[in-house]
Image 1: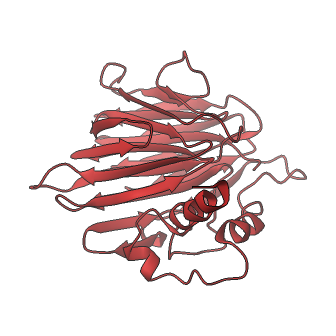
Image 2: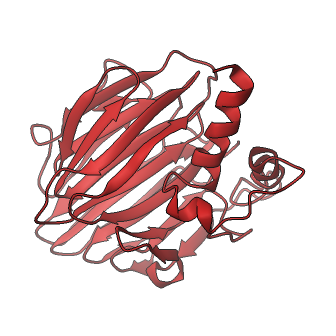
Length: 292
């Protein structure tokens, strides 16, 4: 397959949605301008720093405001525009491009499809997700694991619910890389050994030898699971970054904003944020560059 053919297939799977063919059949792909070009026309304008404003900026995405699609085998919520869900005010948060909250039915999954030039992170919430890719990796990721792929020059992969008796729930996260055309890579770790009860702990960074997995981007992800009310402050690694908080379970108050399960809250133009995690809550913090 030549490069042009690969890119065309990648655009269909990566921009229209990796849930082909069900989503693809419902999408209008007949256009004079590629889906990738249309995406890049839009992608730079929302949720990026206002250079004339030095005060903290925030954006709130309530759980009920997310895009939703139920294809039978896949029940998915999209925080940002994805596949058939398009909201010009919800294209991305800095380099955080995709935050999908997926439930895949028993024995079902995503068939083999391509990606390129994207950092793709999967975090299972429950169940077992079987992964196969063109790099020769065959693995099962489960709750307590984090998987990352640097798609780089191009990969193919598939993901299926390994179990025939229960669904698998996982987060699918895409981050724009700071380096293009890198050699594709795969990594998967268990975070059970680094989990700290009632504390945030790092699960992703730009550094290969740091705690957690690493990506080609100046991004840091932290997870926290709390069995009691806990107050903390999160300090930014860079003034060019923002933090997008996603409440996985329970409730929290971040910088005075009350948040419930599956709410998203982005903050930028600040050095730190205050967090009150309520009892029985779980929170994912994603610090990313705000410039695309």
